[in-house]
Length: 302
Ligand code: G1P
Image (cartoon, rainbow, N blue to C red; front, side, top):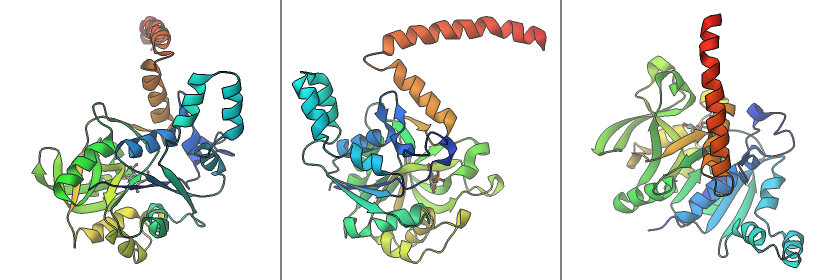
């Protein structure tokens, strides 16, 4: 039981990063030296995916180019004997992995984007990864952790994380019946509830393993929160028919759809980067010392 197909909805406009995202896809923004979408793709591949299905929109050609073979660049690097760089370029798409690009003509929401993947996914279980949610899974990537749950229970699994009450209305939120530590059966799921209506503090983050039943349900999902066809609403119908598990993954998630989350990810991945990590750590320590020395002065002024 391996999930062979992974869906990447990448049609969003990325307005929170304008003007950086005026001409390039937000998923191509780098964390240190690797675009967000590449982290997502590597996570899917490490969990066994062989077919990557990108649901794209306008201004997303850079994603297609990124996962294409770059003959000229490779020849140039080869001729100049830049073996290490050549390996980095070739690593972007390992042998045996294929890409499919589907254009989402209208931006009708995440549920609609997933529905667009139906012809490529067909009648098998599949995963969905939102590249905005960068997850450092520590011992094991988040999707690989979820795959273990899937292998044990053979049902849909969504990744969840506790979030502060003030942030809950930005997420799909679940109410669960406990099954095992960190694992529960979804009893209710609501997209972007008001703080006071949220059924819990467990928010869905951008990793899903789903059965193909979701497509039939998405077909009849009406527009929901924000006037969009929401994946959450289709999952809400699915729990009436099938078990859906909510899994609290181990690791740290960076909300790279926000400027602050994106900067935090860059700092933390920078600190452990094999090439610049040491120097960057020294720089950050100096900077922290400078900031500390500033703190009392600020106090006095106040
Ligand atoms: C989407 C989903 C939401 C989920 C979130 C995780 O929302 O609709 O249920 O909690 O991703 O990042 P978006 O952030 O695209 O508005």
